[in-house]
Amino acid sequence: MDFNLAYLYPELLNIYGDKGNILAIEQRCLWRGINLNIHKINPGDKINPDLYDFYFIGGGQDQQQLMIADELQTQKNALTQAAHSNAVFLAICGGYQLLGEYYKPASKDKIPGLEIMDTYTVAGNKRYIGNVTINTEFSNNDTKTLVGFENHSGLTYLRGNTKPLGVVSTGNGNNAEDNTEGGVYKNVFGTYLHGSLLPKNPHFTDYLINLAGKRKYGNSFILDSLNDQIEVFAHNRVINKKY
Ligand code: GLN
Image (cartoon, rainbow, N blue to C red; front, side):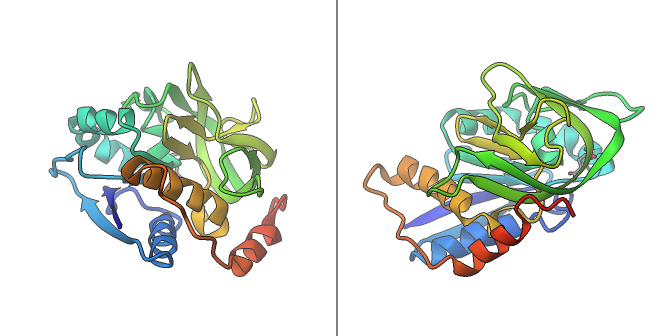
């Protein structure tokens, strides 16, 4: 068995170690004898939505988001088709913001998003930095917390059928107002949690891999359990710790 992952614009959108999310998916697949074929998507590349099981887009400063905005629009149809066919997306911070209707940086025009998620983001006048713990239903076992850290000024608001990834118990999350963090639509997951997120949240990594496995191989796809002692230790060390 194997999976194909489209790594969207890694030269521009990959801050605070977000690439670690791909390494976590890759390693947790390898430990089960599943290969992950990672395809870097660079500006000018045409995305074939039938090819990929996973899509990953990392975070970026306003400048990088502006630089990639036009390119993203050229792949809007392909990425929308992929999302509607239940491919698994993981989008972190700046990448998450660009999955919505728009991101409006401070004192700049709106950057149009992919409109895959029913969200919008506006830059606030404060930067939210620190550890975050949320309670989530998206887990492959009975661990229902996700830990990471946030560093953003964007305030994201969810609308329609885009639901939160979780509820904040420590930190700020989407907008420091409604206690939500992240967004979920079909198998598209967006979050402000850097870290990188997945290595300290193996239950969420396996949840994503299981979604992709069931989609590609049917309900017979089963993920063997792993010894997550180190990952769980790292997870528990930061639960509800602000700094
Ligand atoms: N530039 C965006 C913001 O400041 C996203 C930052 C990020 O990806 N960490 O909100």
